[in-house]
Length: 207
Image (cartoon, rainbow, N blue to C red; front, top):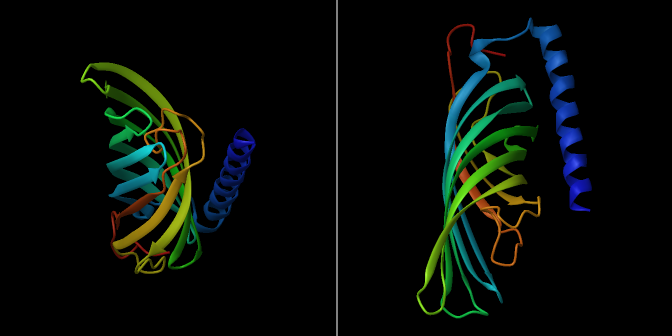
């Protein structure tokens, strides 16, 4: 089921990007450097259940392109620190440093509301400590597929300017090594907030 969800979302967003790019190229004359943007954000996740507490915090610079007035896409790199304590085994703790990157797309059905999909691959270094203090370290890798949405302030496709965004995303990939899941492998909702900053703005930097 989860694989079907991933495939469906992937096909949907790929189709949207391709069709939007074709439309924009035809009407606007192809690539425009003033449609490029940068920025980035921070993420925070907290999870509580019978299996233990989970904490995640991360930073993620981005570089992207305004494909149309309602669609953005780009690449992201990130660093995420995660930790959790497994209640069934009192004293058992895991700390994970993750780094990696991926691609994202944002759809704006309304000027100040966005929907987001983001695929990532992260490499992790895990340190596990058991209930008697013995520890071990090993490396891991994980794919993540995050979906969600949120609020964007002052996003104006006609008069580009920096804007702030805040939203909520969750990993639906089902990968137990993902930095966005708890000790039981369940997705931990992540609060995402940051800035998007247009590049190369000038007299021609308008839609």
